Amino acid sequence: MVTLPRISPMLASPGRLPLPGGDDRWAAETKQDGQRAIAYVPGDGTVELRSRSGEDVTAAYPDLQGLGAVLGGAAAVLDGEIIALDENGHADFERLQSRMGLARSPRLAARRAESVPAHLIVFDVMALGGDTLLQRPYVERRQVLRSLELGGLNWSVPDAVVGRSAQALELTQAANVEGIVCKNLTSVYEPGARSRSWIKIRNTLTTDAIVCGWVPGQGRLAGLPGAVLLGQQVEGRLRYIGSVGTGWNHRERAELADLLHIVSVTTCPFSPVPRIPGARWVLPRLVGEIGYTAWTRAGLLRHPSWHRLRPDLAPDDIA
Image 1 (cartoon, one colour):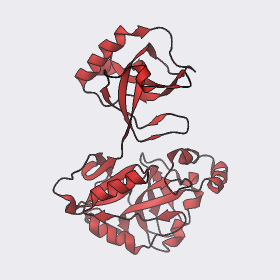
Image 2: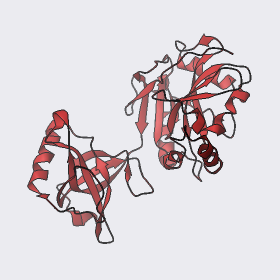
Image 3: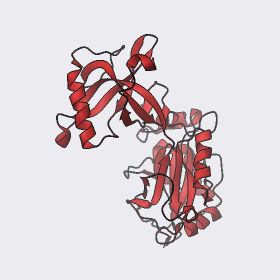
Image 4: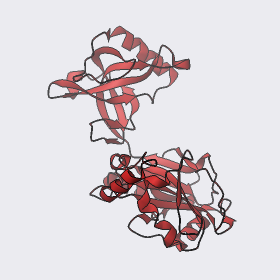
């Protein structure tokens, strides 16, 4: 059994197309919506799974333990994403949530594994045998990863295309998948770094929403909105669809704060009233354009971001 080095996961930076230096320098992989995990396989048939923060989540995923047997006596450190698939074979984060947080409840984890099986997308290898691969370029690590032949019901290696990032992004849009991660072909693995050698590009949808309240910010944002509370008309009622706290610069946030103070009220416009500590309510008069990646089953926006105020729209225009 080999003693494996502890390695923090390399992180991708948000970005957009076109890619720096030209498309031919990059490989595009599908961006998965799940739980990041480093798999430590010491070569004795066991597997240890660590989350992005370093927490041991092995017991939460008993259905991934067979990965150790697949690698036989080979010791490896693998980087990947744990996902749960929907009926269309796409990653479904809400399904996965029923599996997360069960590391201290192995019996419940085993029962959940029967109804919501986990799948590990393995997209990098940082060590193999007694050798570290951190300084090897992406294309070489990819060749090593492919040689491990990790194909199965509960784990797989994603496809990667070179020089066709725009087409890859279009395909994920058509398939209603979160987006792509583009990786520089010559890049080394940078543990713990949010690197520009990996660029994540999300497919973003937009919707118009009514501003119904806000939550004050803290620190340098004291007195300004840390987040605004959004609603849409559903069967004659204003239904809460989530909060958004990103997408403004400081000037835009201050201007929005002035508008929110003007339309301030004491009564919550939502029905039913959401439980939001510290919420301040406003007359539902302002409309914002919001970017998001998906709707949750609870009717909330996933990964919302403020795009712009829509002074050309009244709330009745988006009913």
